[in-house]
Image (cartoon, rainbow, N blue to C red):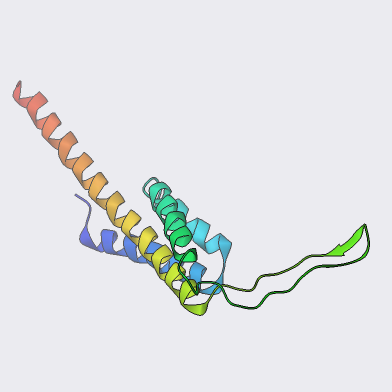
Length: 130
């Protein structure tokens, strides 16, 4: 059986690395947390992207600042920007990202525990001749 200390350390490690990644903007840390939480991190990341898409549709999610583009010649154009997301969107996205990866780690623990119980009961049935 998987020890509680190991389970708590695993989930805490994934959550801590994800927190560091999202708060500092470190792609490497977010990817590491996602790799540690595989395979459950795949649907978790899909859910995160859906949540971010829904958040971006809320009125006020994007700042009001904007800028246009300017071209001095047909081949020398500078791009435009529509502004950064509102602070509450960034914070909410970070929190949802950390929670998604932490829940993925918990789900992995539950799946592994169920698999261990299932293989142990199958082994017991085989030994008893059932």
